[in-house]
Length: 167
Ligand SMILES: Cc1cc2nc3c(=O)[nH]c(=O)nc-3n(C[C@H](O)[C@H](O)[C@H](O)COP(=O)(O)O)c2cc1C
Image 1 (cartoon, rainbow, N blue to C red):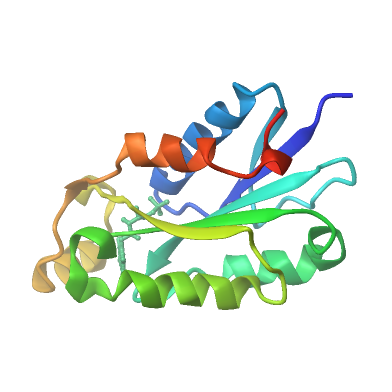
Image 2: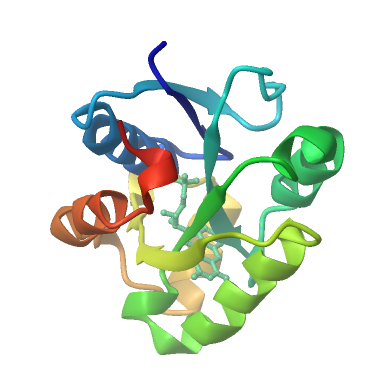
């Protein structure tokens, strides 16, 4: 039977979802079956053998969907390996909050799960996708706009996940 991996995300403007899909593609290349889903709506199926969780940072915090996903699926998640990544502007804008603090916050949101790894990737800020308030806020805070995703680093992270995530 082919191993099945679930990659969930809580993307609001699409960039975390695209990272989730890139991670899924890397894992798929090793011979596992991968499903990508929104963590707000999915329930972890019984036959899934590992889960990757991807969540963006908004207004200084990991989106609350992570803690809700863990609470809802805890009995299943406690039995399988979990890896997680945060996405935000902090890696390219230190004033947005120390990356180490955000990684720690992601660990807390996952608790009591013990993830095999937690990382943070630089995301994307597309002014066209921002509301008027968001645009004003990001301008005021001088948040850099653009696509800062490092696909090389994202693929390398996915490739480096433990054997439980590979075929
Ligand atoms: C209103 C707003 C607030 C944000 N706040 C933060 C923040 O506090 N820290 C951070 O690192 N990134 C912050 N970001 C950047 C997002 O995390 C980044 O754009 C990410 O790629 C968004 O993911 P998504 O496209 O999947 O929603 C913010 C972006 C917006 C639009």
